[in-house]
Image 1 (tube, one colour):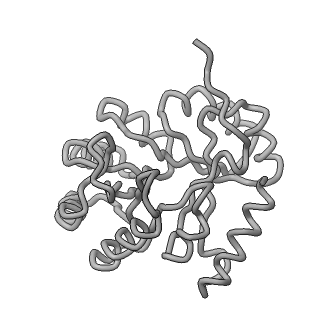
Image 2 (cartoon, rainbow, N blue to C red; image 1 turned 90 degrees about the vertical axis):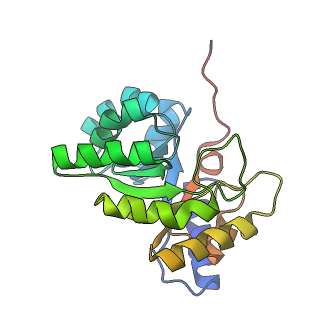
Length: 219
């Protein structure tokens, strides 16, 4: 598949789910992709991209932003507290707020800068010990804690376990968002974004289906 195919598939999934056309935003996940593939997607007119690492984004995007206008960058990978300043200066949204220490750091930076990226809280819906994210049972309290810090939390994000039916996790995330009054749901990737849209996804994160298989760095 490629960008046009994904765009059409999203539109079809919106229609099947009774969603408003254009209600789902496509994040093209450019992590570990060579620049020629990324510029190819930029040349097709797409402007919303996701990166997993602050350092990789910093090495890629400043030069591209001088050549292409209106690029929107979203951080979809874990954020270390010591990279928070660089992240808030570079990204328009951070999907991986997952702990009180990071929330406090982002709140301090927001006060200092007078601005903050859109924030989504990562929920570890599968309760996997190796994965980041707040546990579902702690999500409501953490949403309240982030709001008390005046952080612009708009939604939730999840990465379902690879060996479980993702729809169960999408439904859980949607339920948490509904009861906490959050409107954005970042869920669904190349293999399951259409199912995510049926459960209310507003952001889908698609990489390999747009760009092809990832190219791992050498060394």
